[in-house]
Length: 231
Image 1: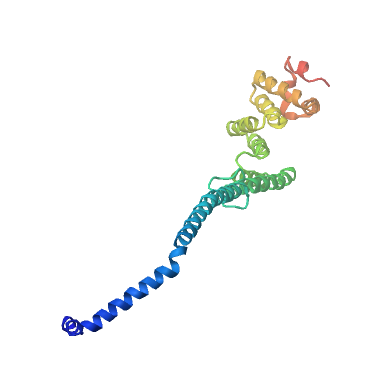
Image 2: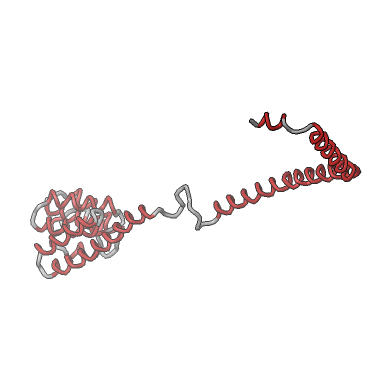
């Protein structure tokens, strides 16, 4: 239908439209022709300027990005991907009970010692055992428990308790001295003198203890005793 409409337009009108379009094109070429080179040059300069800014801007953005990454790595408040030297929170929670247990064990030892001095050996023994449940490495509880076991003539368990206390705390004089008492009570003078010598080397007060302790009565008659203990 459109084709039919076009074909029905008179040739004179088509010629007029063609001439009008041609005239308009000529007017446009005449108006902008002298400036065509200038416009193209301006477009070229703008393109070059844009490229130059892109080339300058990219390294600057890259440097800012690297600076941000470096600052985040140094900043202690920034999230860390590797464990800090400081402790991670989970490790602090496992270490804290160890300190609490040690304090609890010492407190139980003090309570047990009061019962011990008052002659309440059953209560004292219970306190020492609870202290060892709180802290199996409490040398004081091991030594004091060994004293009660030795008093009950449970020499085998008493010896184990003293020996463990010595392994945990070799500079602790009490288990060395009590081992001397144990071997004196079991009539093993050589072992008793060996432990007594070590105890005397750790603490000069051992001289006074050894001269008055009933547990060492048998040992005082042995030849080596006088060479270790001087009145």
